[in-house]
Length: 207
Ligand SMILES: O=C(O)CCC(=O)C(=O)O
Ligand SMILES: [Fe+2]
Image (cartoon, rainbow, N blue to C red; front, top):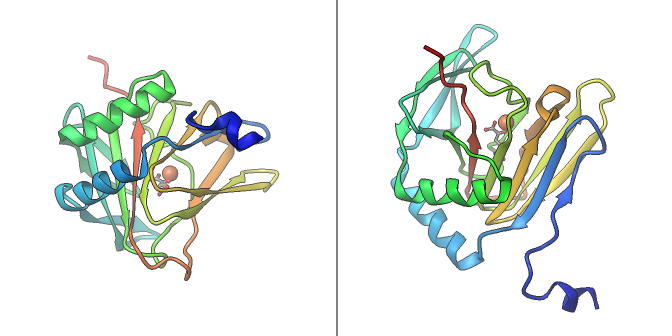
């Protein structure tokens, strides 16, 4: 029986992309009870703020909330707005450590998103801001409501989707950001919050 074979073992890691990059779904790397606690702690302890963006010249304030933490008070620019990172909390440091163990790499920053319900999502984009290491690994931890996450190839337009479970880890690496867009589609089926943490490697400015 397949079930017996995997009993008590971590779920097998799943490759999502057929080519031009690699997206590995590690499944639920945080046990549910612990994930529940992390979710509650992050909801109350993180300094959540509405995100700002300038899109087609318009100043937009998102319903989704964000926060940015890092080793240093890095400045990070996306959607033409600049943020300054806050110092790690003990819980974020523990989650960073967990992500680093699974990815065999180190991260120096984390962007957090809080989607209050399925009406909030993220449009097609790739994480290729100039401050990010080129082809750097991005580790994404999900807590709270399960949501669909999609990839679309920039030229062939092929798509791949996956459900991101409570306590799960998804790792985007290699040439993924150069060739694929990703999005968190909005949905009427979800009416509770989801927290997402993406651990990243920001280029530190050389002297
Ligand atoms: O919410 C997610 O799972 C992904 C968020 C994302 O793509 C980003 O912050 O760049
Ligand atoms: Fe992204």
